[in-house]
Image (tube, rainbow, N blue to C red; front, side, top):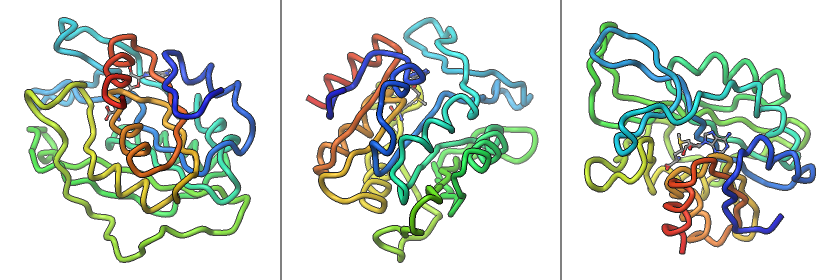
Amino acid sequence: MKLNEIYNMDCLEGMKELPDSVCSLIIADPPYKIEGGGGAGKMRSGIFHRNKGGRQLFSYLKAEQYMGEFKRLLKPSGHVYVYSNDKNLLDILYNAEKSGLKLMNVLVVNKGNKVIYGWYMKQIEFICLFRNTEGHAKQVNNNSISNLIDVKFPRGKNRTHPSEKGEDITEIMVNQSSIEGETILIPFAGSGVECLIVKRLNRNFISYELDKDFYELAIKRIN
Ligand SMILES: C[S@@+](CC[C@H](N)C(=O)[O-])C[C@H]1O[C@@H](n2cnc3c(N)ncnc32)[C@H](O)[C@@H]1O
């Protein structure tokens, strides 16, 4: 395994090849259950892409499929951030706890735009912050940052991936939970924004992306 490479493969397979305690931080944005839209609250799962006829690309992954590996690959005091919407929160929290990762905080990400929904409009996402309980209770590097964070995720023509996240929020996580030279695992590269920020902030990454088109997009973005 080489550092600072994105591998075009299933991370569930890739992670099996990695040694224990290989990384100080994990930033995971897994494919998860989403709402069907239109306010009806119907569930769809996976990722849909307008450039691929709106067809489903991948089923969502259950947290039990990756959380145990996250625990094994993390250094004893390392941090894990996992993106979630409301529908996936229970699955993520339950499986993290079961794997020996302790919830330290939930970041509430205010995306600004509101989506119509029958049970209040929706405009937030969550990022769960866990720590490995094997080591000491390492805190974040700057404890004056609030867990309510306004973000601007790329929209319209600026968006290259259906669930692309922002550079600012990624910078916060990387700066808060790692130092220069450390290694960060990014299991779901998507558009490559997390890899890009890790590289810019002089850390190393190990990353995977299953879809060939997104993989190529991410490679172009980091080079
Ligand atoms: C929610 S998106 C990540 C978006 C990314 N944070 C960004 O800002 O661009 C999840 C990505 O994981 C990829 N994916 C889904 N299942 C995967 C797997 N088993 N291994 C690796 N990548 C996977 C999808 O193709 C998708 O690009």
